[in-house]
Length: 183
Image 1: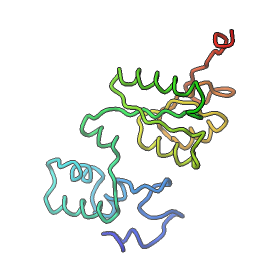
Image 2: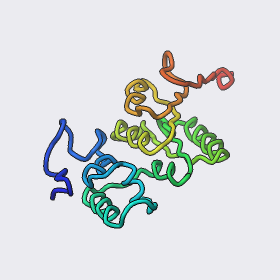
Image 3: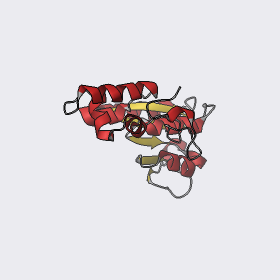
Image 4: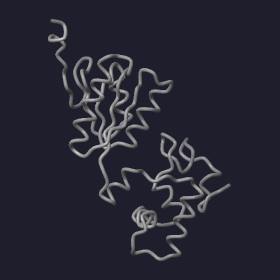
């Protein structure tokens, strides 16, 4: 079934129309389908003043037809909501990972941040997991291992801090010194 602008029945630029490369419908897709600006979609989705009821209905209908789910973080920017930190660990069964997760959650909470966890060591599709984490967080910290370059590229503009990077760090990094644990 085609949406208001016929988005769902055709293919464009080698990807499913109305979806970003990770497969999500974006605010830009809703705006195009409704024939309005991205800002108008924001106003309609958040019940803000400044648009007519007809425009609001057109935007909400387009969003419904495209199965659009607003970004929790985009909405947080509009409403002043909390920040979300993504934590990547390589295996929660590693005794160090729960300690790391507990410390990150404690420090983040003290600063008003929430934490989402991605255990890429046990994930069947770690690429998808990292992409999803990047789409729903304001920053990412974690052990990216040998796939750091690839995952940092997938995270795009999301700030990343690598923990104990292999080789030269690609972005901000925290080098760990295990000498005390060995002694």
